[in-house]
Image 1: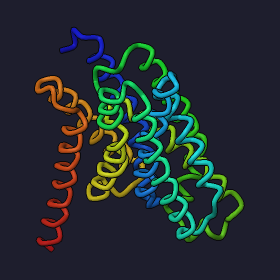
Image 2: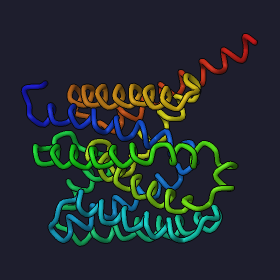
Image 3: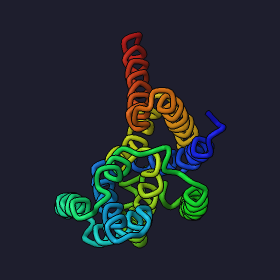
Length: 266
């Protein structure tokens, strides 16, 4: 299996994807932005389709569309209802644009499958270098803003009394989420990115209660899902996103069962 370059690159990519998704996923669940994560994945699909249509890298198209959308939605207002309305508009508009770009492209059949569901054979050395560079940039940004982001995410009542940087932190978080989604799409596909950003983080709440413990356990869950998904995909030639989704769902099911058993014994 590791005799193939694309498999080695995919497993290396899995490490960096697990690193960024473990941190960002914990904050996604804490900030209750799962709906926006799903919407950004649809916007990413549109951006990748646009990139293919005009002849540039699908990753470049995803980065452009998701980052611009995150900035626009982040600046649209702080109220949840207002932001959800903006998200719904963006979701429908960009999903329609993605379909349009694919219909105008002569590569729609193969590339659509790759964009939507991921492809382990689509990763080369250049992709892995871009992935590592963007991952390092993202992790450095998270490290610098970690304390303020944690305060803004886990102490919402307290954060309301310190509004000075709240909107700025919120916008920066949305942009970082856009970058995470664009990076992760190389493995799991545009429409199932939210699996890695929501399901493992939701499962960790039943096993850990400290922030750092949640992030570490989240990393383990995500890396296990990606690596096992890649392995099973290699054996069966089935989409890697299918296996990742099943594995993460089983982990979440085990977490629910553990919590149910613990409550039953009380």
